[in-house]
Length: 458
Length: 71
Image (cartoon, rainbow over the protein chains, first blue to last red):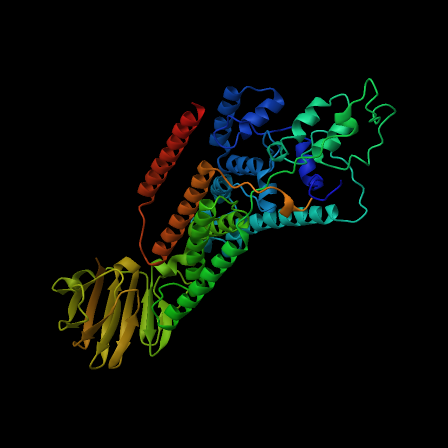
């Protein structure tokens, strides 16, 4: 019986070509066995191969790391599995992918044409674009793999496509995924290689044209070989189910609830980060929770593994390669003036550095202006404080939401060291500005028309 | 053969625990990102030490489990 599930999985010529190089990652490697595999291929023992690798690492640095990461992702292991291919097929090796991504990011980050080696994007004529090169490169590699695999899948589904058996040594189905009953049959029928290939891959036996005698299934034949002439029925390959629609829907519902909650927080001005960024962070937690659930019920991670890997790689890139894209959440001050939200002060030029009546920049130490400053420490549960002196140090909880008010025209300076922000104020009476974090709002009333305020977080 | 007619085999206990640990690690990563967005800063060196210690414990536990299974 010929069925789609029993036919070998086709793969793109790209991967077949890589397999033809004869390099298989070793089983004793520290990081994926790339060095062992290459050493085996060229006849070099593990120890000298590793020594050479370490020397190359010191000599070439990031270039070697990038090449290593690429080789780890593309070279098959001893059972024929290619990490990047499995990633594209939705059965990722999450741990390996994370380490590969880290290697690649470290490696590419040290290339001279990226910003990392030059200190600041501004030193390039097209600094920002240069900084994006590694990201574009990674995106290109991922897109290439997806295209190759989708084309390969499309070919395998073409009606009437000739069933070409895989080349010797080519990866059809990883050995550990084969039916247990099929493997012995394949290994025992070495005298009939064509039959063995078909049996191992589960293709149609009826389509084989056996030579005279071989196909004779008469029980009276002295050399009748019932196993090959009339092979026993294939034992169905057991499968471990994926997460299933219930868990997928549960995950999706959590993601939708999270979006609603974050939108509400944004509406209430209680979010200290961009709502999309916040949702992407919560999504990681949701996916992780779903994977815990999948593990508990003994299912495969399946597509959730792909999602988790994608999100983690995205966040690693966001937090390490382009950290300034997220700085506004850790530095700077998100304030609300007259109902309009502003992110000010981190000094990186990504966001507003000034708002109505407030001009901010990187933190500058007020120094002697605060030599006689009064110190105000907010206690837990305190909802208001009055700054009656012209120089004040206000100590607030890290998550405090602050609403600054005054009874008259107020000018002065505000320094917020932990947010790397200093501002000059010129505001009329009423609410000067508000800074919302997750804590309860505290009203800070300023009485002196010209003040110097320093905010410290405890 | 229809995949639905193939026998279903669920993961053994060890693989389930491994999968759940991956899930816990991913949740921890997400919580760390959220904390970072809230303005908390991390001691990266200390974080690296903790990660290595946890990884070592994990591998050690795997070794112990392998020994127990081998008996």
